[in-house]
Amino acid sequence: GETGYGKERGVVGSDVQGARSWCIESGFGHCVFALVVALALPGWLMLLVFLLLGARMLLKPAARSCRLVETCELLSSTKLMGDDELDRLLDQHEDRQGGGFMREGRDAVFTELFGRMDPGYVLESSDRECLHNLLDLDSDGRATRDLFRRSLKLWYPPLRGKTALIIVDLQNDFVTGSLKVAEGEQAIRNTNALRKAFKFDLVAHTRDWHPKDHCSFWDNHEGAEMYSIKELTLPDGTVTDQVMWPRHCVQHSHGSQFHPNLDIEQSDVVVSKGLRTEVDSYSGFFDNCKGSETMMRRIMFESGVTQVYVVGLALDFCVGWTSQDAASCGFDSFLVADCARAVHPEPDHKKLVADFAAKGVTVIDSSQVPVQRNFNGETAMKLARKLSQWRVELLATSRSQAQTPDGGPAKAHEEYKRKDSSD
Image (tube, rainbow, N blue to C red; front, side):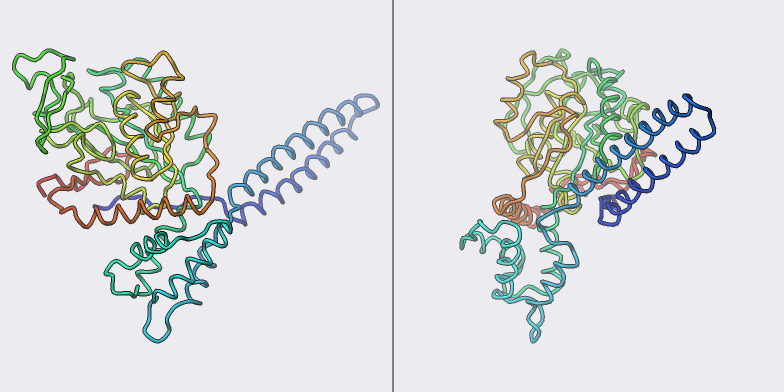
């Protein structure tokens, strides 16, 4: 379905220049204003007003503005090529006779890209083969012009470090309802504050969206007790321990709606999970047996995201699983602990950090957002391998296996043209 994602919001050179000129013009304007006010007053009062207004209005806004300029320059500076420069490089190495890019032309592009990004990184033969496979899907030795450009831009621009915020399950039932998590409303306040403090390139909300006969509901199992553990056989034949949860987030119910205090923008994406009756889905990426996948990974890749920040409820279940799957999918995954709350809080913060670190997730607090990304050849190849693996999996997965609830404008909390696993 149509998802409503992909709007790029970033800092460009003109913004930096505008911020710098504002710094100068604003400081001069404040100086003139302070001088005019001071001259209208007599004697010592004139001097006092000039000192107070002049010092406060001239210096502090200018200092704030110059810090803004420095931040803009930091965000916009990169060792990577811009889109126009990348296009010129592709034009230079395209095979003019047959159209598209032969292996030699692609090799030249790879060499120049890595030389610009990380001169000390040596492209091994396995690296080049991975890149060729990523960009030559039909393995005919030639990548068409359009395919090569699209494939290259799927891999290369994300290295600039686009950011995504995944807000996990901030729904009524988890905040004030049948499966209330302690301090859930504080998690909402902290999440709202994080969004105001930093502008993410993409914001996605996950939501539990269970059918009435979902396997995790205790009252769907005769003799089961609430919060007990019951062995269930998953669709792939494996046996797992399933928590018997209270009935929660049933499709179209009040409990399934996002909490009214949660800030939601029209451009936000909604990804539903837990739609299949026979298996639970803690993660915003996959169900618990990884037999079906949501649209989350595809949305992230196609939006050029490399850094994922995960918040919401509950830290020891859906937030944790989502952050771990984000890491396993090749994203830099950060769990923002002060914007999440747990069903069973871990009293030892160091243990919490170590446990998540072992699974590829970095635990931070909101004051550390954004985490500066390290540009190097190893990072580029890590992403290329993940993209190549994802494409293979995508081609191998039939539509009947894929659970693909779509996203869309989240503000209206509407259910869009969702494709069930049976579609």
